[in-house]
Amino acid sequence: MKINDFKLECYFGRYEFTAPYLLTQSDCESMTIKELLSMEPGAEEKYLNQWLGYTETWGDPELRRLIATLYKDMTADDVLVFHGAQEAIFGYMNVLLNEGDHIIAMYPNYQSAYEVANSIPNCEFSKWYIKDDGTKWTVDFDELEALIRPNTKVIAVCSPNNPTGYTFTNAEIKQLCEICRKHDIYLFSDEVYKGLELDGNKREWMADNYDKCASLGVMSKAYGLAGLRVGWLVSKDHETLEKVVKFKHYMSICDSAPSEFLSKIALKHSDELLERSIQIIKNNLKLIDEFFDRYPSLFEKKPLTCGPVAYHKLLIDMPVKDFCQLAVDKKGVLFLPSDIYGMNDQYFRMGYGRKGVPESLAKFEEFLIEEKFV
Ligand SMILES: Cc1ncc(COP(=O)(O)O)c(C=O)c1O
Image (cartoon, rainbow, N blue to C red; front, top):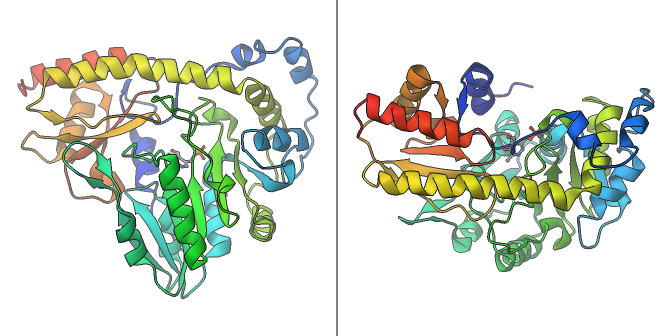
C-alpha cells in the first residue's frame, strides 16, 4: 500500500516539541498519571499491581462497558477499542473501501478520513465542503445529496470538526442519518472532540441514530489524555466491527494494559474531566475573543461553540502559510495554516484547550507588534 504523507503530522513532527508557544493544539490540557489516579481512592495501588500481559483485542471488557455508557443505547458488545483514534480510522477505511467505491468526506477534515481512499486504486473521493458564510462555518445538505453516486459506500464526517469547529445540531445529526439510511450508505462519524459543548447543548452520538454508523471516540482530545493512546469505534454494525478487528490483528493486536486501566479511571470521572477541559477552553475563549476584537483589520474571527479548535481568517495581505512560518520562526508561536488541510486560502487553526494559551497569545501579540503588522 502506498499512502500520501500525513501533512498535519509531518508539520507537527517538525514543531510540536520544539516550538514553545502552541496556539493550535487540538487536545485539551493533559495531566500526570499521579493526578489521574488521585481521582479514585485506592487506584494507585491497583495500578501498580496491573498485570502486564497481552490484553483482549476487542479491549478490556470493563473499559468497553464504560465506553458504552457514554451512549444512549449501546452495550459493551457494540464497542471495539483501539490504540488511539488514528488506528480506528485506518482500520475502518481499509476494511470498508475497495476498488470502484466512492467516499464523500466533509472537507476540510482530518486527513486520514479520506487519504486511505486515495491510496486504493480507482477508489474515488468527493469533498463535501464546509463553507465560510462570512461570519461562521456552514454546511449544505442538498450539496451532500448531490454528491451521492450509486457506488457511494461511505460518508465520513467530523463533528465538532477539525479544523473549523463546525458542529452539527441534533436536528442535523438526524438529517444526516436519514440521508445515509435513504441511500443505504455507511456513515463514519469522527466525534473525537465530543463532550466539549460550550453552548451547553449536548449533542447526541451519531451511532445512536443510525445502525450503519460507526462513532469514533478517544481519550486524547476532550479528556486531555492523548498519551494513553486509547480510542474506540462504537456501532450496531457488528459485521463491520468483526472485519475491523481482523485488521487490528495486523496493527496493534491489542491495547496497552496500563492505558486501559487509566482510561477506566478517567471514564469513571468522565463528567469531571470534561468540565475541567470546558473551563480551560472558556477561559481561553474570553482572552482570544478580546484579542481578535483588538485587531479586526488583521483577522476575521469565527465563533467557537463546541470543541477545542476554531479556524480563523487572516486578512493580512500575505499567504497564511508564510505568516504562520514567520510566527514560528521569529517567536516560536505555532499555528496550522490551511495548506496543511489541502486548501489554498487564508485560514489558520487555533487551539483553545491548553493552559499555556494566555502566555502564547501574549507572545503572538508581541510578534504582531515587532513585525509591524499593527
Ligand atoms: C479529528 C481527529 N480525528 C482523529 C484524530 C486522531 O486521534 P489520536 O491522536 O487520538 O489517534 C485526531 C488527532 O488530531 C483528530 O483531530
